[in-house]
Image 1: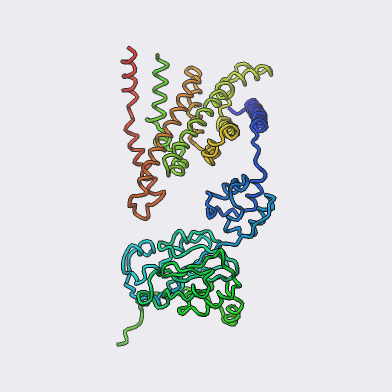
Image 2 (image 1 turned 60 degrees about the horizontal axis):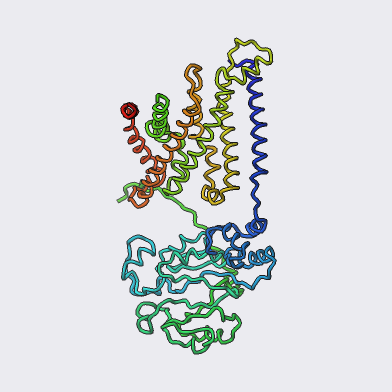
Length: 304
Length: 231
């Protein structure tokens, strides 16, 4: 029976309980106070908080703790890039070393029409599965175009264009998810010292005729580039490799290499140049296609 | 010896026969949410056992002295205020709100304590400890204890309340660990696409519940075994 008595008693009990618990919890908060490192908090605030794991730590908090304790380098955060590194340096009170944002580059540049000896592949539509099957295409090094990297990308920065994965450098943050997803390891991370970087856009380890048999555009291993710019480019078997530590975007020899490469497989990739943008400036964006579903019922009169 | 037998029966009853998860279907959210890996599931089970015991301790005390019909504290206050001694005073209506309040506060307290003195444990608990605050299994444990504090002629003591709580918590640990073991294997199984994830987990839970129905009636055998053992 809910009488005034019960009501008053109930209110009293609740009030008493609230007071007791409030005192106990307030005391416990003082007594069990744990100081949080303000440096860690500040670093955590400066990081983008993507928890992508690109730095090699489990998440942003772990990286922040490692930075605060001085274990980790300041420039490991790929999504944050230079801005985050500079902020971290400010918080830690040390000078920021110049760091370049790492971005993904694709070491293959043959689209579907340029890859030879292709076979019809109707299995599981993933690169990882197709990579297990021999004879999907002639080149066993190049892009399969089944979009494992596109699915791995959390930033919508990869598209398969004409069967070749293509990176949107406006969106890429360098988290390495695509590099881990690619079963053929043709995506690597490169420090972008300028907006456009030269890369070896082929992974084929074979030479001349063997490459020509499987690809219309692949690197033949002619070593012309290594001869022209031996400081930066060295031959690793039949493939040139670029030493990005010694890479200088304004190097004259490099410009010559880009011109002289007989297959034009040393490419500049990165953000589009102003000339590229000007070239397409007057083109209109394709209109988005609206689905126009027509009925499948055929009600035409018999007119035969 | 009567007490010991009844304690063991309460414990087994809460842990196996009337398992909180698989018989009453309370605490399903962590049972499905945290049962992907055996070690985290076991950690969650331990945390629940710990919190359920603490909250049963506190809630039994509160119920016994304040909330049950004819509890000493309100009666004393009532008579102090000059009320009629014959009035029946029953604050049981408050049980839900008080229990939730006590559980939330005690979880807060435990969290602070663990954070201060056992940082690695605090890290491994992660979000589970605050999550337990809203775990219905904990509230259910306290409400089960309350049921046995209604009739003044056969009141449960603190030891019985604790046996029920510990049994319930350990039953939860058993159920969630078994579930996690099955789900680890299930990741490798060829599950039909529409049933992937929660669907197959609920089917597994249902089959496990039917399996636990097999414990019904075990209490008679256990009671017999204890009596022969003690004779």
